[in-house]
Image 1 (cartoon, rainbow, N blue to C red):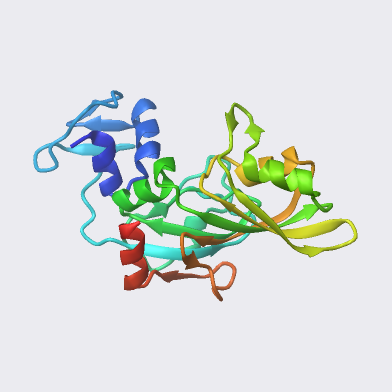
Image 2: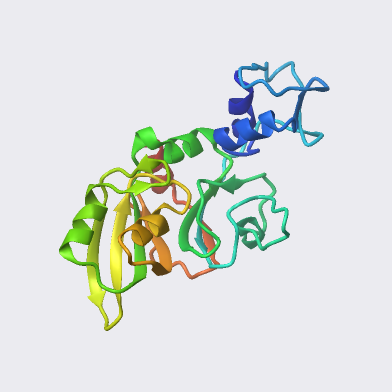
Length: 235
């Protein structure tokens, strides 16, 4: 089994984050530092350690939905000692981590798990999982700006895939919009709104695929229901 896949199944992090940890020299196999992504391990024979702590396959899979507040980082560790989403989860013995990310200043739906396969499915662009956001933005976009947003915008070094944006409410100098995207690049929604000259004032993710945040209060979490887990695995 590839080392990064084994790490994900052990609940260390997603495959992509595990790959970064390998490249940073944080992973040892049988006592030796390994930084080659092609490394394979035998879960029954090899001893793998991350940051000098032995890891093992998680037998119990955990699936959690969190309503992330603004002011928390979507990481397990933070070098600046900021508040982390993992701090909001109590009573869990298994090592879990966030699926994907939400910016420090963005609130809303976030999944946490120790299931590396599900994490891969929900974060890899090829699966095109829809994410829905409600945003308060400066000004009111006109027809041309809305069409540009929907048809793809050049952000940094890439062009965004086609997306949806609809105005829900209009105010004197701002508006509320619903945004649907199938990607999840760093600060993508904010960058897209900046590109059409309507910067985000507030941003909240309200659904991933057909799993909705619902009435879950900010800062609270719950286990995903069996039917929700089954649905996500079948995507």
